[in-house]
Length: 159
Image (cartoon, rainbow, N blue to C red; front, side):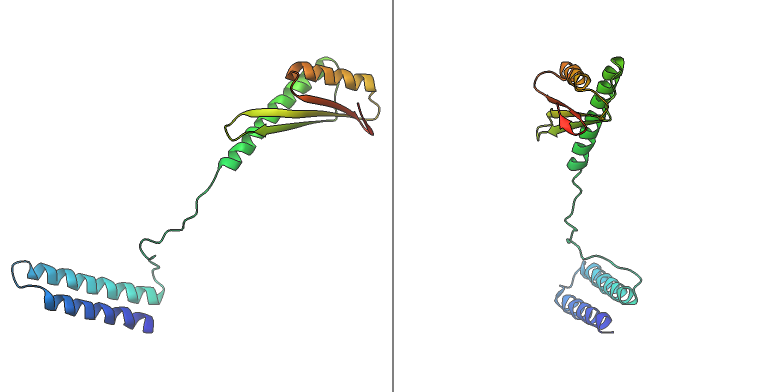
């Protein structure tokens, strides 16, 4: 009950004081109408707010949160880059009848949007020979250029 009466009383006092200091003249009736509207809106808002019918936020108060999608965009770019490169490597190695079990690709995207591939690791099963693993690494190096580190790993040891 207190949350209804305090705003209504404050609005009544403010309206009465304002009506008392309004100068007489042709705009007096318009100012009295504005004061009456202010009082009516205050009463309605206090009553509806106390009854839980409406929840009007205070003006000028904002949430202050925002969504930063740059991390999601970066992760999507990394994923698309890795998937496209992985497909190219798999297709090229399939031409030589070489099939690694897994292909790990380390991609870095700088703040300026530049994409760099740091390392590619080809993982083969234990029944793959070291020469075939080295041949696969050489094929991948020819695809990616000399700046990318390419490793071929046979289960249990690096080559």
